[in-house]
View 1 (tube, rainbow, N blue to C red):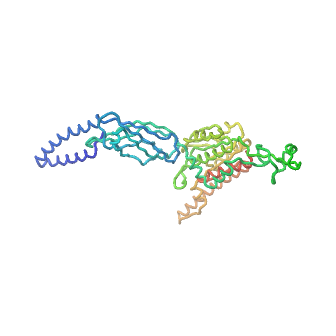
View 2 (cartoon, rainbow, N blue to C red; view 1 turned 60 degrees about the vertical axis):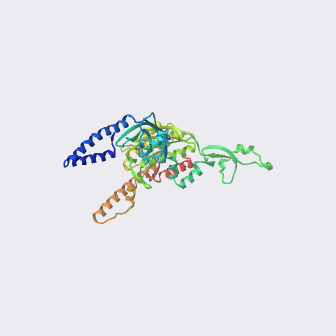
Amino acid sequence: MKPGAPLFCLALMFLALGCAGFFSETAALLWLLTGLALLPLLAADALVLLCLSRPLTLKREMPQSLAQGERARVRLVLSAGGRGYLAKKVLLWDMHPLAMRSAAFPAALDGALLRRGGLVFEYEVIPEERGNWAFTHAEALLASPLRLWRRKVILAAASRGKTYPDFKKIQAAAGRELRVLLERTGLKPLRRRGQGLEFESLGNFKEGDSIRAIDWRATSRSVSQGNRRRVIVREYREEQDQQVLLLLDSGYRLHRLERSGAALRLQFDSALEAALLLAWVSLKHGDSVAALSFGAERRWVAPVKGASAFRALMNGLYDLHSAPVPSSPFRGLEDALARLRRRTFIILISAFNEEDGPSLSPLMRAAGRRHLLLAVSMLEHEMEALASSGPGGQGARKREAALEAAAAFACRARRRELFLRWEKAGLLTLEASQEALAGALLDRYLKVKLAGRL
């Protein structure tokens, strides 16, 4: 309990009266009588607030699963029990987690509504970070009858849940061209006559079909009008039941803030969202998807497949975060190879440099003999801008800018030389910025599927 604003005003007036008492006996007597009158008044006002106030109870209603950055509605039901004093106005704060944002508090609630049986207060909260969250309590600030005192009351109301990446926004951010690509290839079965890996059905020969696709046995049994035989071909579609592994670097390499639109985001968050989008498309194609992280946390999500498998992937990755700790793509790939029992499309997402060549190249070439490996390097915007721009400024500043641009250009050249060596060894490589990563990953996956490389 602490004093209210009216008590501070009274204290200032009482102090001023006491100062006047130094110069006047009448003022001194008045100061003394005022003090004697105020003491029981202050005590009585405090006792009513402490001992005679009606107890408050709070109940919170909200979804247990939230989407990152998406507004969620919270419903608070506040009621007063028993009989006694109840303040005319109640200031309420719902102590939401730091990972959420709300502008609704403090909320001034009418005490008259509480006297009639309770009130309902609704507000919106925006979860800004992925992961688990928990509400522990709310706080109410009550005023005494004369508003001389204020008392803070803790209202226990626990709520727990999870915040997932907003997958609708992830799809929308991929762009219009990517959505068209998904409609054409990601959500419909792909048919390729005589060139697929999995037989689907028999059909009539059409212009453009390969002769090797003709099923001569079925053709010999077929008879059309006029006793002329129909030529029957085998129709194929993409091979299903393939396996994709998403290998994510959660260490310092992707723990960098880059501008994405109007906001700053960690590269790892963009990499995770791109990986989830790719996982969704892969599951739509009938493939099984697994995920493994290395660096800040080693997390393994076993291969899943089917319409409900994407939820299992979300539950396994929604609270995965990066940290400024050492990470080794070599260790991550070594761990992945030890877990795989069949040919897999391994997508390794990190930020590579020329120093990775001596240690990582032999392991990647060995992995490429059994698996299909795609090395994805996320580009650093500042370094790419330096490597692409010329020196600016004058005098010493111009020389300094020239040295920075030369260093960035050399670093980029050595990285591209490393990627060229990997491509000559039969590995796949991809360089993409934070904004273009999702579209580039999905485009490469679909090209691999269409080419039958899995």
